[in-house]
Length: 149
Image 1 (cartoon, rainbow, N blue to C red):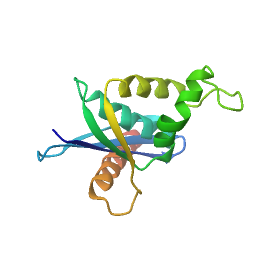
Image 2 (image 1 turned 90 degrees about the vertical axis):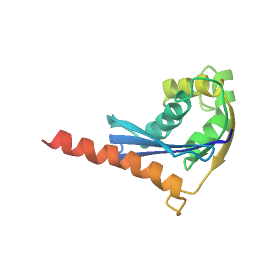
Image 3 (image 1 turned 60 degrees about the horizontal axis):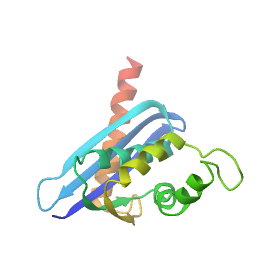
Image 4 (image 1 turned 60 degrees about the vertical axis):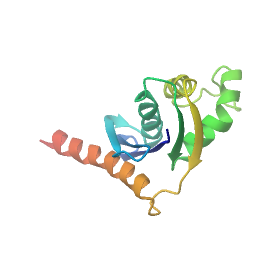
């Protein structure tokens, strides 16, 4: 079984209304679309939330390729998190890690899976990344309308 996941987060204001979007491709089946968001959040929080929600979608441990246009997520999970955990969730400058609860949740989710992390340039024509971005922004636009009424 081949599983590919594309994730993206967006924010209107930073902080502001934020959304996340996910496109899941399993073998040659129809894509699965997920999205959600929060009223007051940041872009980085939505990038993390997209990745968390994508991984939570799977009940069983899976082998998958996860595409993100967020260097924050990719570098955080592949480079920074080991030292953060070793240093009790402090940065190299001894400050608390931002978005620590989301990083901890992501860490627990990735422990269940085998993940090939891939960075993809955002807004560069990758149709699945563009769809994840669309889903994130769609949530924001729907909420803007809801909150303005």
